[in-house]
Image (cartoon, rainbow, N blue to C red; front, side):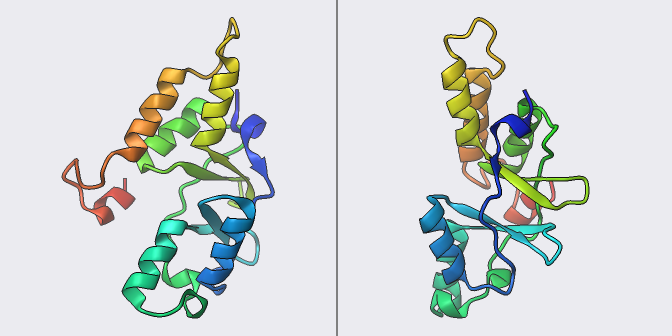
Length: 163
């Protein structure tokens, strides 16, 4: 099974110059915890999470309406492609310790978003199948890797982002 089958199409996205308040409203409206950040050509340039918003508000000491997404977003886009297998997407999630991946075309343009939740729900639906394509054990291993406390392996946050 490939990512295209499970990904959400046309996810909410924002630009670096938009405010953190704009991203927070989108997250509330879409019931999600992250928003891909794109340039004028829809190429993914980063991600912003609800945690990023909270930490920026705390450390910058300004209202989120006055902080641009570009000041708080992760700038290392970790993505996958629609023709990647679910197993490849899970491997990327485990290595990067992320729960969601923007799905991009060959030009890096955003076409969708896949989450560990999407994969887990499909695995649960397949439980009664004679030939499940997604192993529940793999989902559990991915979740375990994503939830592992940062720094528990001796790497700094900067080192983890370069993996």
